[in-house]
Image (cartoon, rainbow, N blue to C red; front, top):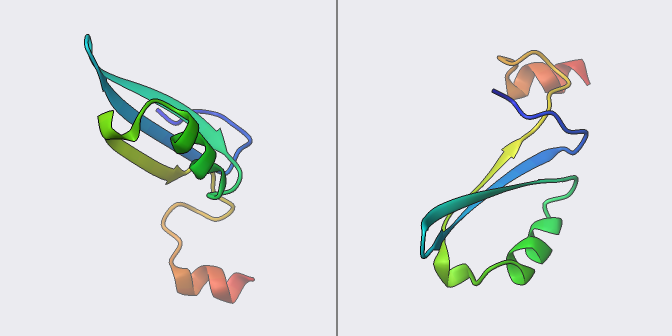
Length: 72
C-alpha cells in the first residue's frame, strides 16, 4: 500500500530499541532534509535500516529514462 502525502520522498528509518526494531516514516520534499532527520533522531549507531523511496509519479509507472526525457 502506498502512503499518501504531497511530499516527494518517503523515508523509512528503523532503529533497534530494547523492545525490538521500530520503524519511523517521514515525508520530505528535498533529500537535503534527511540530514536533519538523522542528525536529530535517535542515535544512528542503533539504526538498522534507512530507505528513501520516491513518493509520487508524473509519468506512467513503467516509463524509462529515455521516454521521460523525450516527453520533456
